[in-house]
Length: 256
Picture 1 (cartoon, one colour):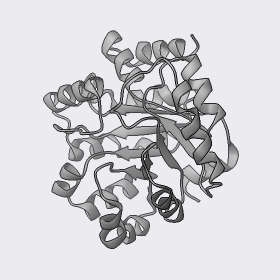
Picture 2 (picture 1 turned 45 degrees about the vertical axis):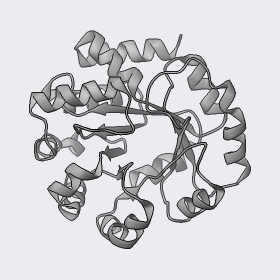
Picture 3 (picture 1 turned 30 degrees about the horizontal axis):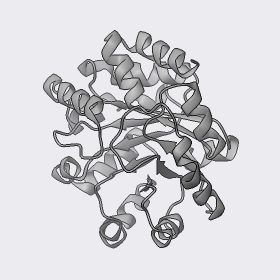
């Protein structure tokens, strides 16, 4: 069974998923970041493939991508870094990247490498679902990769149900239609969260975009299986320029 499915079978609430940009703050920080996140109880990690034009990302993650690219990070380099990762990392790993660099690398070659190093799933925000179903789903399944789709407050019920029917991992609930970044409150999102829960979807949901403290994390955990943290961790890494200190600062902030 895929590690993502195993996680949701074993743990149905308060899951903590963390995103980081590979190659940030330093080129060789990828493996130390994974080890440190796992050691501190993180349940699931999204490994961000840096890209020069990340359309769904706010300034914090955009800047981290720029630094990572300047550091020399590439998809080829990332897979080299991950080659022996499963000797040390047991938690599920998801590759999060944009279509352009993945297509340059080759979609099937990307999936094959994900399978080789032990990646469990992928998120490609700018890959249209119709294209995925027509051209890529069979390839992803061949290499045992779960494809994670995003939904927003603007996503229609018809599309949400279509996504649910073609998902076998979890659904990524974006808290708002804006780009990534921190928010102080999710009070205005409760109707959206309740609406999705009332649909009785077969897949669990994790909520991301804007979670940075105890209050926002607890709120989203009431309405889903857990929280996805991105910008808050990248900010902590940028402030400390150190993986262990960055993880420590993130966890301190999530308890405030």
